[in-house]
Amino acid sequence: MRGDGELTQRAHDEPAHAYRTPFARDAARILHARAFRRLAGKTQVFTRLPGDSTGEQLSDHFRSRLTHTLEVTQIARTAARALGLNAELAEALALVHDIGHPPFGHAGEKALDRALRTHGLGFDHNLHALRIVTWFEARYPAFRGLNLTLGVREGIVKHSRDYSAREHPELAEYLLDSFPPLEAQLIDLADEIAYLTADLDDGLDSGILALEQVRAGVPLFRAIHDDAVRSYPDAAQRLTVYEALRRVLNALVSDLMAEVRRRVTAAGATTIEEIRRAPARLVGFSAQMETARAETKKFLYQNFYNSPDMEEVHRHAEQVVTELFAKLMTNPELMPEDHQAQIPSEGLARTVTDYLAGMTDSYIEQLWARC
Ligand code: MG
Image (tube, rainbow, N blue to C red; front, side):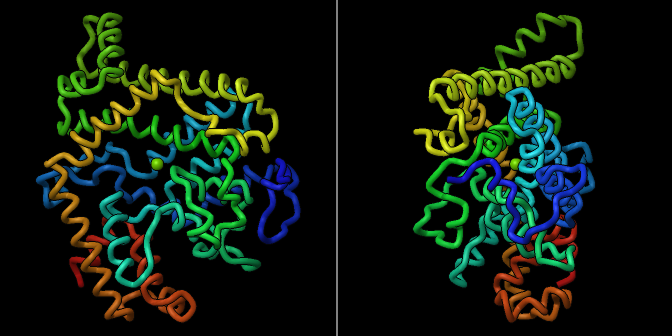
């Protein structure tokens, strides 16, 4: 049986640090990784506004993957601490949760996956994150990767989806048939809370979403916005929108924490093994808030992520990724030497993918323009 102690195990044994816990060290290793720093240049929803081919109109206050990651970390750390969970594990998991994302957000991920499928491979940002922390980051003379604890690696594998043990025998070490600890379960929801509220904010700010449209399509927002306007009838509209978004975020986190407490008590789960073997994940929203979450997400997909305005942005992302992938497959000498050196062991298609996936949006644009 795997208990708390096993979660701190590393693939390569290291002596304990004098004053830092294993998970705090993991959080620091992630924070200092090159792949983490590149999140600053990667799209969350957009790096440029629809219809703007030059990027000149881009405001630099929209979320990037880095600022999104920091918002998730803030929510996860707060909720974990308030629930009596391991806040350092939650922090490390939040910091790493999007580290495997390629440039251009989900459009980039889809294009990379499609390109790789023609070579019998596939691209998945969770598995790519695992690859980055277990192999790709080269910072230590004693081992490849960051040598993170098992608890953090398991959380990466179990972020936002479940892999079948049959299809992924290479992931056997991560107990695919059981739920992860509560800290890892928490990250999925902290991620949703962060992006649902932030994307309403950025959507309104960019003008892609109109306030009346959000009020009509997101009942949770409308009710809370009405309250905010009642509290501050004379305040500027944008300030009552911010007030409403803050209250929405707080309502989601508070509901989540109450529901976790309720489910853990109802399941009588007091050990990590009982959490792993519970009939369902123990971190979730109440039924009522789950409905509100689903409505909000559906609204954002229809009106923001997949809105007609964004089609051109997605098409461009797909074109850049697809064309560069093909170019590098036929001209691997265009890659830096340290990447070329990995072709014999990793294969050409995976090496090209590692290179492309690591790029920021602006780097891949420049390379595409040159090639
Ligand atoms: Mg995320």
